[in-house]
Length: 71
Image (cartoon, rainbow, N blue to C red; front, side):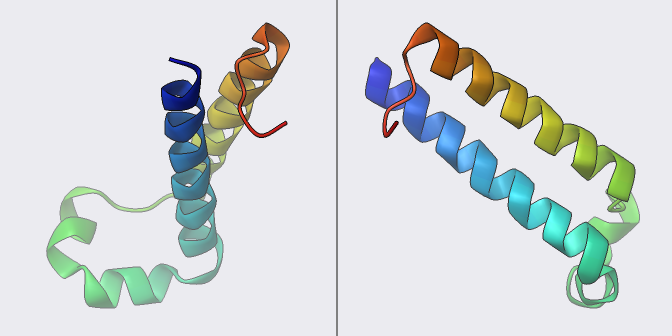
């Protein structure tokens, strides 16, 4: 179970970092290449930052419990 939790955490971490990079630096690219998705799910800096903070909090909890593989 330890490896599955770590893999899920690292996938979420990569996704949250990518979402923040797109929100902060490449918003026009996202709208241009994903027109249909961007209409229904507009990218916002606040939500992606909140997502990143939540993922870091989950990582902190996993680390404190000793379940974070790789550290």
